[in-house]
Image (tube, rainbow, N blue to C red; front, side, top):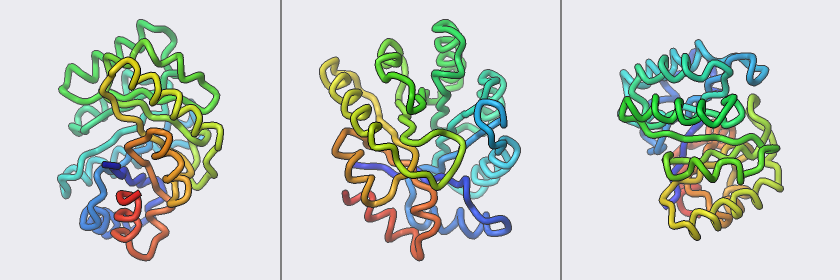
Amino acid sequence: MVEVATSILSVKPKEEAKTFFALEKAKTDYFHIDVMDGKFVEKNTYKKMFEYASYIKRISNIPLDVHLMVENVKEAIEDFLALEPNIITFHLESASSEEKVKEYINLIKSANCKVGISVKPETDIEKIYKFLPFIHNVLIMTVEPGKGGQTLLEDMVKKISTLKKYIDEKNIEIDIEVDGGINLRTAEEVIKAGANILVAGTAILKAVDYKVIIDEFKKI
């Protein structure tokens, strides 16, 4: 069954508590925490996302899905592990070597937290294959990371299906999460290609009723 991770990047100021409670009531599967440092991507959301995630941890049992778009991955992992998230995902492009990738994987796992690796649109999916047996999730960016409200890049659907074919052939148990430009139309495409976790922000937060749109995603 498809799961939904709601990105809280575009939650309106002063409406945070109301929005988080409404999303919990609507049965989002995860709160997706987009952590940006202003270096790896242009936007800087680091402080705000840490505050939001800390607040959610106090008021909700919905798991945190932390997506690190940062240059200093080790520091960010250590900061967000303190919040006991369900999963921390870092970018393959932010690791300077294969050894660094393994170091980050081990650091996250040492805290009994799940590990995800994300790839930007221009990164070949084959570059992640060697790490698949050691992680829980691959997050495929279907837009350029760093901005909300973008349109899904159609070439990324093929990337999802390529990864799905490989993990099926190798019998690897792993989630495929997609992030960027997800709405009811594009969700159907990416699910058909093999994705089983959808990250959606704008499509959910602009809806009149969060539960209706989340239920629609899960029915696809």
